[in-house]
Picture (cartoon, rainbow, N blue to C red):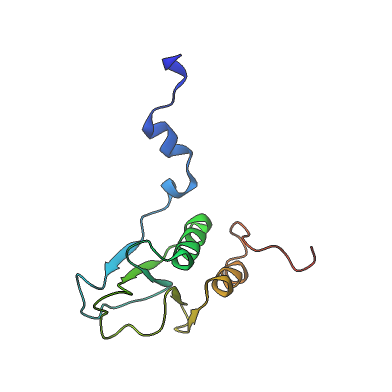
Length: 123
């Protein structure tokens, strides 16, 4: 029956990510000047073609973290202030880390009060 089908706003209310504020997104191709970046920062491929960038992005969303996203064009013009590969996370301490699985493991360690993404070592 049509009355049993939830509306889009009702479905959205069921998503944990809908309660979190949207992250700040900087497209480094459209705006190549170096922004002031603070806190947790995710550098990810801008077109959605990189499954490793997607892995880290979805992990951060699932955990409900507040972070800034910097979209990086891996196939064309890259802003001069961006180095390394994507995905890459700059932690609040200022240290940077690549390799998506290592990032997911560290997200579990750094944010233990959020949903666990990596199986525990004692399994």
